[in-house]
Length: 407
Ligand code: PLP
Image (cartoon, rainbow, N blue to C red):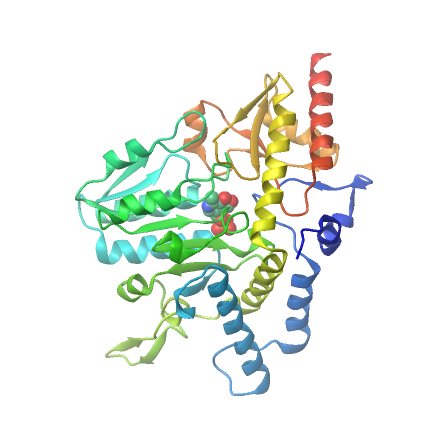
């Protein structure tokens, strides 16, 4: 399909809504994306007509829902080019996926004085679970620094690797800077030292082509709600050899083959990691969201993203009172900035009154903010339905705010 922005915008009912009696400009896609009618319809349909718990019933509704759940798994497997359906684990989101790996991996493979490497530009969700694991196992957390453009310093990364390094966890795209990290290279370097890599793909899956075989990543995590799907559902992709090797994270129904007081036998993949009733209708909705973007075409989405970020950079750089944080050579649809002398919170509040939704604050990346010696930024993050006309409105609104503060 060709990228038809008018058609795409029509697919998202929320964009028709007026905020303060004007059309909404939604630039908070890094936090969560809006949902197309196609996803809303599937969720509605399942709750209205087909709802029944999966994997446990012999009746019509249960079989239908189970089938749709497993079809969603297949859709995701195909989308990220995994080898097997059972390498796709449904979780509650990126945070849940990372916590799963951090717990289970540490349980089996992390010991006193071992090391985990993460980067200085990670979201708290890819910092704290590793801190907890390191604390539990008396291991060390080591940090890849980034330069002022917001690019990871690979020479420093190489120097951090030792015989004690057990795992490397980095994000695909920085949620605060928009940097597209060289994950393929990072993985190659790690693998040449026999170290597995987890990629936090919370901002990657909706903006980049993710081919887990080509990347050769060991784990890739993402959230449904950031990729035009429902909240409360996400994915952990793991290579079979790792998922087989890791112990279960949570115990409960579905993750067992048999239970007795003497011995419980765990289920096969993927169910070993899907304890209890999962958000199965969320998973079906996520499958539909993935179909939706696959139908538009990820290459078309990448082109659109590039157009938006290049345009936003060009326009915002025209304003001398603005500092942009993160000017990596490879950047995706996120622009973080401050208007000199104006608190990010004030800018965000004023933009809101001009119908522009942005995010302000640390974006859950406090160490990154510390790097720049700032408390937070204003972040505009774009999605498939955003346009250069909307960026013009942002540009004009920023100029208005600057004038107001000059008075
Ligand atoms: N990692 C990154 C890079 C993110 O941007 C986010 C959310 O903003 C997360 C992890 C956590 O995602 P979730 O809250 O959906 O689990």
